[in-house]
Length: 556
Image (tube, rainbow, N blue to C red; front, side, top):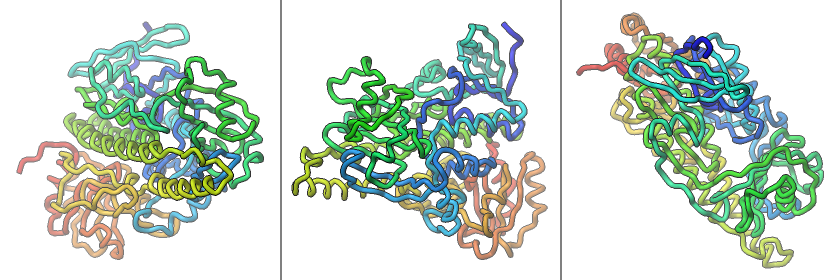
């Protein structure tokens, strides 16, 4: 045994959730040790879509531009396109902007897509590398890849964990105040707590339900072989080989996924078999090199029965498991880390009582249930729609089948890939640290988002000037928005915040944006969620409001 390591937080899992949590903690001066069994960040592409809300969090941390430069070239279209086979008939195409175009468009959008950032199509392997690089630069953050959790003891005073280095079996201990299990769907941490998944699994569909083959491949000749405009997502729709494939670098690398057919023995699949599956989806012997291949299961919509037990918490795939339609798994994991990060920091620093952490599961578990349900619906929409036998025929019947399929797939693409309601509309209504004003939020709808400052949801967004988002003015911790012309004495806030040791930045909202928040004052949390709003005459409530939002017990 070497000298024990000491940190405020032990993070088990070095994927997006664990790495984002390390960044959130490190930015707040909270120490953390992260361990992961892999030798480093992901080699395989894995998730491929970063939603706009996740990009807003990357902007808050200062590296959204770096993320947007990763993966596909700036001018690469991010269309979602459907084909009978990639070299054959195109059925439908949902056009989406390139990274460069998204940067140009974002400041001119309003309504559902009023946002500091638009979505970005980038493989998880690139995102993880960037998150790791930034985490490594933070004082107090230690990343240990190639290490696994052997066991731990948790009590009221903290965590004592035993960690093993896989290369040589060397062991050391970590003493921490809290343990976070972000260690994937087979989470050792979740299993150690005796927590089960609930929901639906084992769903069988014509596509995206059952065993799938994932192939990471290099094909420099793919674009020259395909008689169609470039796309980000290539979906193959026929009776023989259903698949989807995401462009990884816009040049020659792709992430190909196909449903295994009855009788295919996954244990016997070789690199040559993986190559053949790709070429069947192409409809031609397009040359390729298989970089890796593995199997996985689609058809999950699972959420852990609990996300916390004492000082141990679950996040990411350890807490919820998705069929990856809509790209919701990775993005939900990032918001887990954002939500938990500021709360852990407040507790570690003594700003909030440990009971603040009870709000993590109260807020995030309902969102996980909501998001897994949306993903399941998208999987049903795509996977239960089967190709008819004549879909590939060069006949009038074949043409009619392609017309019908194209119309359906076009509608499906718009439903799955234009989802501002899912992206921005997750809410924390009923949370013990949200101070309700008695108003009702807009209806929850996947494809429509109505900005609202009703407490419990994302703060409504606006552009203040070219290149400057309202979010850029928010404090890193708490923000009090006061509308221009509001008669408000800032000394009241300072007097309320001082005994609570709360870091609150006051900014003035231009009078023209008063209707956006429908209130004189709005208290914004570190995760850009509206905690409370009220009139200037209610400023005297700020002490109690802030105390409740910080997790303190407030008496009537």
